[in-house]
Length: 531
Image 1 (tube, rainbow, N blue to C red):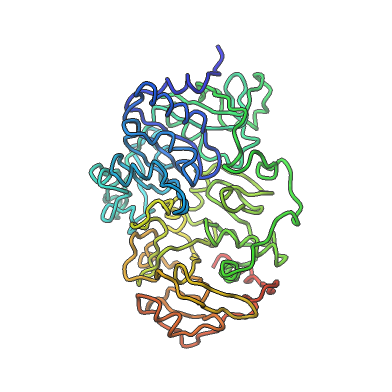
Image 2: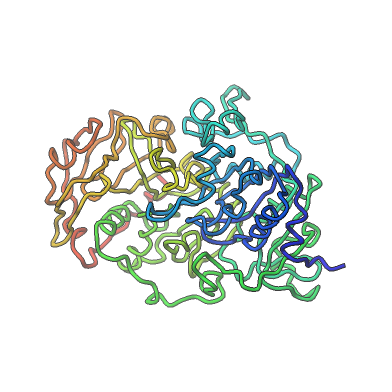
């Protein structure tokens, strides 16, 4: 009997009240045809009703055009747990799922991506749930928001603090899905899945195991179907015994903006001259200075935002290959991509399953994390996940909390104020008009990284901006470098809502950073990579 069915038939398989695990990232791997069919069925029939979705990395693309917005209908969606949510510029309409969150129509939780994958693994193994230190002292902690994004979620907690083996832990009870909807490139007639055109494996097998081992079903959306027995066993990432139904979408795109790029899937390797360098401007200056924190031979995690430009800085400086990049969707090495394609890499050395990548991150096996910030408070805590005034402009935490939990070294990058008019060039920085919003604040709206706990763990933390470099030290946040052309009092100390200390050996940032030409980047010696 064939496992191939239509998207409409797949939508009929969902029951009212189902828990549905969906494999997707912000710009890749979304089983969009199946999700659209579920939304269309609800419009016709009013069913399924009251479903819960589990979205370990993201709930669809950044702007809500695809993914969870197909399900964001009153009565259909009751609860959602996601690593991140659709986000976009204020010039575009608010995604439907965000409207439901803001209006308290669904219970919405922002759960660190690695923890969500851990919850799947524990559900699959019939274990009670996840014990973790990840998220302690952040918005994940039940003593703060407990992952809840609105009042409906706060009324139904998903995490609690428990004592175990002499210490305090966060406990997330496992949630077993009845349906897993995953995506691959090819299914053979038996249901074996291969991912040869995908930019990431994501967590398909873990989600399939969680559903299968709890009596549920697995629906796989694929690009094509092959004859049974024609896939190489070592190419099969999800075996046939875990797959119940196959939906074919011959037009599924590799990423939100990419029909297919063979360098993303590893089919070919692009020549290095094919990659564009970062355009000149203040963001490039910040990325350059962040790059100076890297060491030869180190393994570095990259986050979305300014930090994603750092690999292009190394490329321009002739240092590509000196650092191994690792991103949460699973790519290792190569050149991580930007924009909607972030989460993929061209010319990757390897693409591993996201749950395994998060185990690597949660345990602090890498050398340095290059991440972004929205706000920094006086304790050095960082908010990157939520702005109450414009919530849908932020995607949530994604893997940020997992990555920063035990990272040895963290470099946060961002502008000192939001909206400043800046001019860089000729070796200096000019502030033509100050920003409308301060980012070094008395109290961050949400704590995504806890600066106090970071110091207790011995984490080395630096904040890189266009006008200064700040270090988290035992006696407080300390300005240790200042951009040429910037006035310390007027442009830095007076533009922060917190008292910043000034290092007695305050240095001027290298003027070459502010000149539109390669600046002679020198990475730190190898010995410092694992210090």
